[in-house]
Length: 615
Image 1 (cartoon, rainbow, N blue to C red):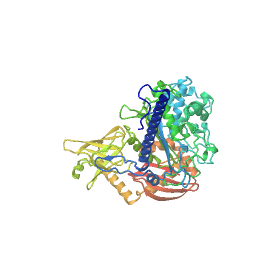
Image 2: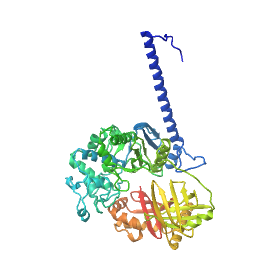
Image 3: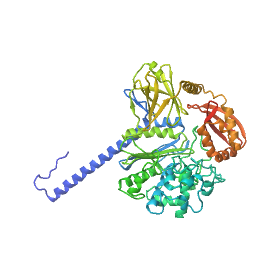
Image 4: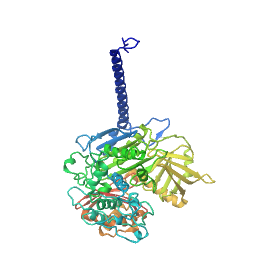
C-alpha cells in the first residue's frame, strides 16, 4: 500500500482530509469486495442448482451422482422453472430457468405462475388479520357470518358447528378435496354455484359429511366457504380484499387473485404443460375457486410473504399479523396441520410450508421460522418431482436441518440373510409393504407405489436410494422378521408381519407388478374393469363392490362431479392401452366424442384399488 507523506506528528487539516478520504476509499474497497464475494457465493449456489441436482440419498465413500437441471426439465417435460431463495430473513436471489412456453421467451423473475393450493395459505393470512382486528372469531359458527348462503345443517353439524379454525386446519369434515378449474372460453360458475355444486360448476356440492373437529381431511371446499365468509363480512370482492390486506402490504406487486387473469397480464405467464409434454389445450385453466386455488404470483412475491410471516413470528414487523397471532397461526393441530400452513422440522428450527398443484402447474413454499426458505414454481404436471430435487439441493447448499439428502453407509452382507425378512407387513396406515429377494437384490414395495431395491446398513437396517426412507426390522426368537419400522419424512410407522398365506399372495403380486412394468404388459381384465368404471360413473351408479374400500369411499363422495365430467366428455368411442407405470398402473388413452382422456387404474385381486383420469 502506498505510504502517506503526511508527518506522523499532528497532521494539518489537509492531511486529516486525505486520511479521511483514504479511509473512505479503503471502506469502499471493503464493501465492493464483500459484495463481490457475496455475488460469487450466490453464483456458486445457483451453479450448483443448474449443474448439480442431488439424488435423494448420498452413499458414504461413493461419488455423488448429480444431474443437470436442464436435463431433468427435459426428461420431465417441464419447460420452465422459477426459484426464489430466502437467507437470513432476506430475499437472497431469484432466477428463472427454461422458457415460458416451448420455443418461447425465457422465464424471468417477473414471470407469473399459478400458485394453486398455496393460495389457501395466503387466504389464511387474511382471515387471521381480520381475527386480530376483531371482525372475525376463529371459534364462531360460520353460519353466523354467512349472509348470502348458509352451510346446510345436518346430523353432523348438530353434534358440532363448523368454525373458521376447523376450516383453516382442514378439520371441519367438509367435502370436495380439490378443483379441476375450467378450460378457457367455457362457462364459469359463481361462488354460490360452486358451493352448491350447481351447473356450470364441475364440483360436487360442498357439504359436511363428518363430525366437525373429529379428524383432519384435506378440503379445498372448506376454503370456498371461507371465501364466502370474507365476502359477506367485508362486503368487498375477494381479489380486492386480498390485495388490500395481504398482497399490497407485503409488497407482492405482481400477485393477484383475479380470475380470469386480466388480458394485459396473459403475456407474462408461464403456459401450462401436461406430463407427456403436450401443452394444456387453450392455456391456463381458470379457477373461480379463488381462495382455494386462484392466486397468480411469482416466487419472489411468495418469498416476500414468507419473510413477512418470519418477521411477524420474531416480533420485528406486524404488517399483516402481530406476534401472538402469527404464533397461533402456526401452532400444529392435526398431524402437523396448522391454520393454512403445514408445519414441521426435525430440530428446534421449525418450518412452515404449503405445496400447490393446478392443471399444468406444480409449486412449493418452504420457510424456516428463523429466516431461511425457498419458493419453487414450475409450469408442468411433472414439476412436483423436479421441485423435490431442487429443494433438497438448496437445503444442502444452505445447510438446512431438513430436506437435504442424508448420507447412508452401505455394508455388504450375505444375500441369504435377506430371506428371514421376506414376506408382507401391514403398516399403521393399513397399507401393505412387501419384501422379497431377487438373487442378490433385496426389494420392497408399499401398496400403490413402485417396487424399489433396498440396501443394507446392517443385518437389520436397510435404506432406499430412490427416496429418503429407512427400514428397521425386528426379529422373533427364531431370527425371522416379526415387524418392520419405516422412518420417513421425520415420522415413523410400524408394520407387523402378516400370516404366511397372506404374505405369499402379497409378495407374488408385487413381483408380478415389477414384471409387468419391465415387459409393459397390462393387467388381465383391466380394460374390462375400466369400461365398467366409465359406464358406472356415466350412469351415476358405480359398481362399488368392484372397487377397493378407499376408492369406493372417494367415489361416493365425489360422484356428482365425476358423473358430470364423464357425461361431458360425450359417448365413449375407443380405449387403447398405452403403458404400465412403475407403480403398476395400467395407462389407457380413452377417446370420447368431445375429449381424449388419459385413465390410469391399478387392479388387484380383480378389484380397482386406484383410478384417476386427466385430459
